[in-house]
Length: 344
Ligand code: H2U
Ligand code: ZN
Image (cartoon, rainbow, N blue to C red; front, top):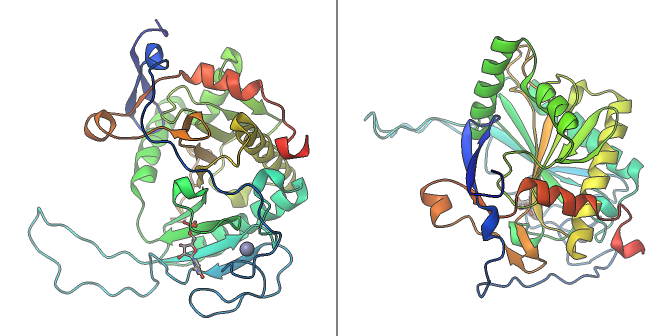
């Protein structure tokens, strides 16, 4: 049945995806993406994120040597955003105040080294920075949720090639978290076991979507993946946030991140674009036994370094759809070397 058109249920969002395996061979005469230059300098005097340089807002970066954290100069959320007195009172025109704080995190002083090219201790340092900064934001009384994310590559709207990520924290739950909280809570109440913990166990039995795993984390192409080479990285135990991870678990997570991103780059031998982010439980001071810390990788590329998947037409108007199956995507990623192609 899985070679014919079918739909799959996303247990984490409660939404369906249409899978059309027979369609993967269709010809492509559409848009071909431009590739970004492959070799970057270790330091770029015109880069807003390199050490000692002046940022767009006029502030100078320090002469940093590890990760570098600063308040986003053009933050989408502000700590002291006043309530809009002119807000409409009509029930069809609803708005609500939103406060928050946005940070930027540079991975290292090196302008040219993306996640898979960094040594494991440096990746661990990035994970520790995300952990500490998330925890600090979560402690602010007006913050209810912290989103850690990386936009990688111009194709994903990344504004600067210097490897960096962002933290946006806010006073209300965003849409994706509202969905995941509902599904995980419902599953936990029914089964007394966390949804993702059970899901990962089942995937290890079935094996055909597992990309890489160690004692504490698994990377797989989820059964319900929408993006062609989408990957879910999940903890093996219930865990509300990065802060709950031990140093052994952080090392295990760093290894999984290096594995996933190295295979991504090796797929088309380019710096593989994606949007990646962690889903942590709401920072509401409540226990979250239903939650399992996880990260989603959403890469846009489909059949080559220059042909991307577009979420248009049917996807915008009806539901997401994919051509190659998650099982075929897993096979392709699994068959690649875990040594970065630039080191060959
Ligand atoms: P991307 O992850 O989309 O590349 O965004 C980088 C962020 O860095 C973006 O939100 C911020 C932008 O506002 N930024 C600064 O805060 N200062 C700068 O000098 C450049 C970019
Ligand atoms: Zn730079």
